[in-house]
Image (cartoon, rainbow, N blue to C red; front, side, top):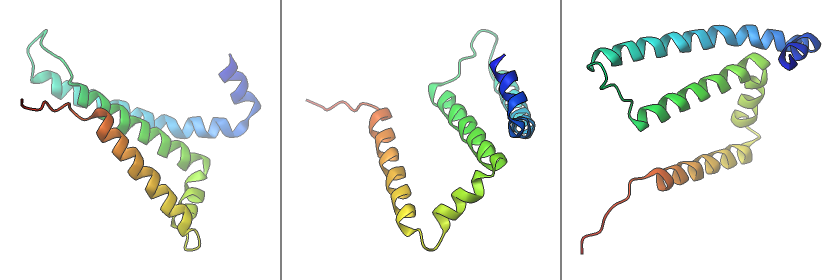
Amino acid sequence: MVVGLLVIAVGSATDIITGLIPILAVGLVVLLVFFLLWGFAFRQGEFEVPKAIKWTIGVVAAVAVIIGVLYLTGSWGYLKDLIGGGASSIVTNVVFIVLIVIAVVVVVGFGGKSETSK
């Protein structure tokens, strides 16, 4: 009910939702085809998706939705100008430093444990 009232009250929400539906539909079709092909490689009852594949699919889906929302709301151009603008080299440097820190945290946090020999 809340989503319905929000869509009625804010006209631009309808445009965003109608713009996101094709992106989400294509993503679902891609996942369906992927899992059908993946299922052909296994016998019945042996199907198990590795944890890395689950994370990869989740990250790709999240990035696709975020880019779709940014593009449909018009924020993509603003973000592109903010990062790629000639006068905003400080913003670009901060963004890249944050991305490097996130990458290091992901590698250290999710990296495999190595055993030392005694």
